[in-house]
Image (cartoon, rainbow, N blue to C red; front, top):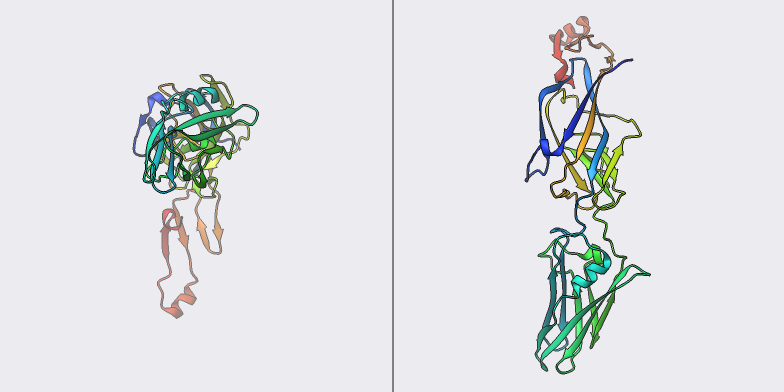
Length: 319
């Protein structure tokens, strides 16, 4: 059976970005309207996304190591990596700009410590060495990596070290990353709507996800994604008049919006109109125009119960 279809072509620069909801709002001069006997199906058919975002941003550029000395004294190495795109070698160079620090030990006075960062190209893992460079001998008691909960923009995933505390009790400390270096900003990007859709996120919650785009490409190229499964999502029965649509592109890790640094992304949406199915349940009949429900109860039975039995209900009241 033929369906009515409407294509909607969107450009991000034509939308209005809401910093609170993080959605782009696209107002439609000509609304998308379903007939009384129709539901609306929605499908993302194609999307073009520029790989113009940085792998180090304000969301993941804070490096921090705290450590305690045996007998008293606290040391802190911290650094905010400038926003941009980095290779492992470039990030190693950047982290090696962290200056030595002087820690006042309760037992031996001032002690100078340095932090050295290296990267193993065979294992793709970073290593960090804390060592004394001046002052009397003193042991490092314990070391905390990215443990201060005040901050949420740690570089921990990039360098492969999750939040942790390590008991050391030695004059120096070497830490080899638990995981490989991860300089991918994201493997996938999700196109989300704020409409209620029959899609689920990674923990099974309902989400407005329309599509998942695999971000396979070099920096500053464009990913051209086309829908190959041709499956539609049916909108809620209340969504029959659409005069605007809210969309956003988010990452797979924390649902963060992507900063494309001024580059434009585009999306094509297909709205299809399908006929509602007729519903007959016992003596409940929805008429062909889907405007009202006539509910009939046997008069004889109702006379015995003294019930007024001839009631008419709108379709909205039963849906």
